[in-house]
Length: 553
Image 1 (cartoon, rainbow, N blue to C red):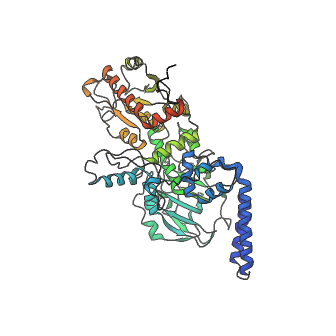
Image 2: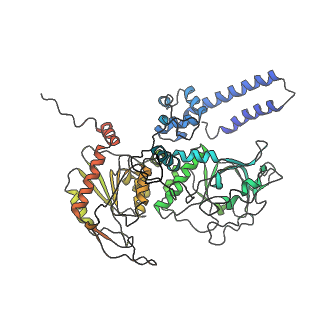
Image 3: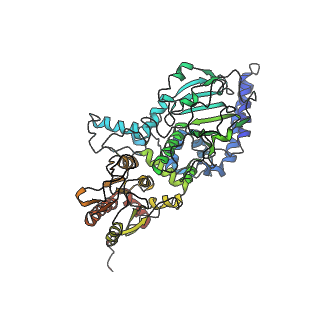
């Protein structure tokens, strides 16, 4: 925890310590005395500088004990600094679950598996373990256990390359990129695999060529970084020290290959995996660069760009800004990707019968905190219902006015109908769903808004259009209650559907719904909200005990 201008002074102290330790002719006692002086001055410097910078953590208060668990030096600084605002968090022993020796009772929460695994596992313990490893912080633990050094440094000035299995995530120090022949401003292929050849990417370190080559099985645009790293070369020079770089990037940098910025469901594959990468890197600073690895000059249409504030204070950089140059990055992360096999969120083999990933709850909290979403509820006497309308050609609710009118006959329901299109600021959209106790919509990417709902929320996929698992699984990950239409004979399909190439298709038509059956489901959802422990507690905190009988005078 230091100010951004304080690193130079700290580096001086550390350098003095390094020099003393490396000089054999310096007497041991003299070196020890200098050692004490260095670290004492370092501590004094940090403590003198840290008081005004605790806000740089920029974490939800609930996350602070977890951060302290993985950053004991920062925890000690909080102990020492009288201005640290997190004193009450110091006594809370918490861990995410990927740390060594983290007992289950100290985690944020544990998954629940009340349902049957449908043959996926033989025992309940196996079912819980599969969900934990596939969809919770156990996934981070698995990846951490795979981390392997592929190019090893001898000194601090050398380079480093280390990766998880299949190069789905990598870290690099002092890495060299030669883009002089890459032609990044030509063509329209966003994920070219011919950007580098031997000697055009690498560092000064001892490369295990066979180990690197063995990680190529998942080579694919959005599944691994192997295409970019397979020509990593052990260079005979230190690129930065020997001034081989046109540009040297000091700021920590995350590389990311983006999925689809015009589709909410797919773009959040990017964001969820970038958050997972932060956990792998044990770093949540927003003073970082994010570089979009796009090997074309095409513009990227990002309808949800405000979400980048969750990760960085700086604009996303396009890779083609480095076209024609030799560029070195002192500290780089190749982040987890959107469409990995057995990945997080997408292509995830989610065991049936389980719900409530603490990872997805933490993602929700971090997003709400850093974007600045404000929870206005629970309301004292109302349950907030949002009906997602559609201005698209297909999957419209044919009788939505009647459904809205029916809900408004129930005095307890505060009903809001919205069309969340690109014309509405995305933060304002998130505010809507963040303040929706019940969120209702037909199958479509807009249901991804369940990620922003409060913990007590219900998402009702009014009709799943014969795609049963997609948003059910997302609801299970987030831990909100999922509902969908139960009686198909009380649903009217306008026609057979008209997919442009596949013919009749349930997603390419419109639907009407029986009003009485719809209202029955909404009231059932309201019952769930009303009885949810998180809703009850939040309501008590906001409004006090409102249901206690008044004493007679």
